[in-house]
Length: 119
Image 1 (cartoon, one colour):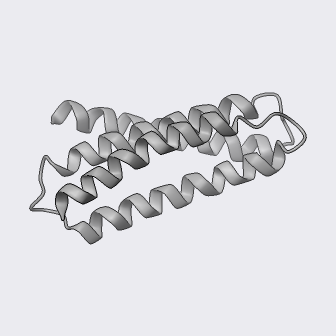
Image 2: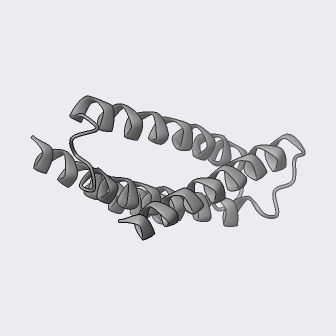
């Protein structure tokens, strides 16, 4: 499980860098990289939800269902906020909606399965 934890931590740093870059590009009105950032953030969300869900099984006794749900919920809320900013900034461009929703759905599926198994 240490390797999953390592990947999860590296993913968190990567996601932070991607989301900060997205906000900076939005504020600077640079649209050339927004589509790539939107896709990468959605892939990162799926990855983080999968690895986070797998980590729950490493030490179920330390956490609770409420803790798991609140962490996942907060994370999704932050990522959804950045993706929403990207969506509105890219309205005239081609926002990769199917990629964003597909990647997010994979991660959410893992989170829902984890929650079901914890109940």
